[in-house]
Length: 416
Ligand code: C2E
Ligand code: CA
Ligand code: CA
Image (cartoon, rainbow, N blue to C red; front, side, top):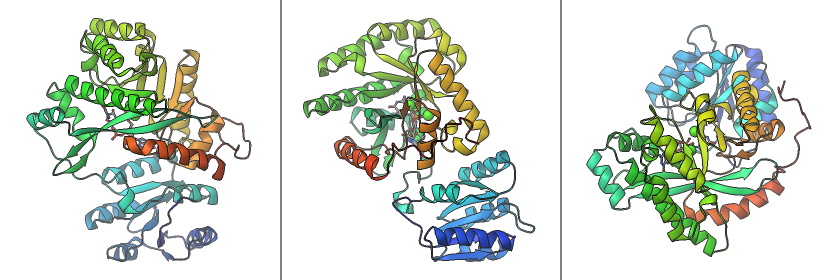
């Protein structure tokens, strides 16, 4: 069970038998405030008030108002609670509905296939968090002007958050990924999706990356001075690699801060077209000669292609979160994950899984095997000051939550 628990749960399903089973499971898991409703119309009325339940288990196939229509109404009424979608439909249908609900801004914990297993239900419930804690609540997109972003970079309004990575087998802390945020004086913490594309459009990626890199290296130095060796991973865009002086700029900065280039990893995503292949190859080769590690990011999404693996000197492959989170119960994701991991292994690359969001993801990953894990289950991205505290807490969690204990010893990769 997670650290938090929803106070009230509503189960909506047209089959009374199913309602009984789910209610029973919830009570077994320690939930006392469980309500059941057998149709969409009544459910909507229940969900449209201030005392709406904090979590809804919703069957998407119902005779009159079906789950998809209900989702639409929940969006309109501004429902702020969490949803778990339940269905006997094929996995892909469920996933499409989950995606739809998420795209419309609802907080979906995940989906359950009928017959629902208590373990799967428990695993999803463990991911529930009070609305106030959800990092995923992002304010409506504001479009910032290029000049505003330029001054933000120059004035030091960008700050780095760091997300830890751990060894899947030993649990050891092995480094962090730097994720930039914009501490906007009026708008609060602004996430990279809202300004990285803009920086690309306005040709500000060099300034942005150098600012992120500089702050990271200073921080790594400060951690080292405090006795903590941290290997940082920094995201770079094609625009950075399209600049022949980038390897020298980076090496100079690292030397100035006393950070070894072989401790640094650059994560590359192929965002648009490779601007100039010859320049990018030149830059990447020279970075490798300087012992900087190169990782291919978001593998499997189509932004990163197989062709890159053979052409470019990458030594880390990061499998995108869509093939990690929930892969244990999603055959397509699972196959893509396994194929990517095998490819990485065969090419002698370190394989990292991002998007390890819950205990089920973690256990599954340990079972199928992969080098490194990163994700909300391990830690959310955090300000630099929080890292030492997280390291000690993680060591405690390994013991308390028995994170390194095999879960039943099922060695079967297919997970079936
Ligand atoms: P990314 O490189 O794929 O980074 C991982 C993103 O997934 C981060 O989002 C991180 O907060 C989020 N994440 C981590 N663990 C989990 C998890 O368990 N579940 C889920 N659903 N998400 C998780 P964030 O920080 O919003 O960054 C978004 C993207 O912005 C990054 O994706 C990266 O492409 C880009 N970005 C961030 N910082 C920089 C930067 O300094 N330079 C460049 N060029 N791009 C950056
Ligand atoms: Ca990345
Ligand atoms: Ca990614």
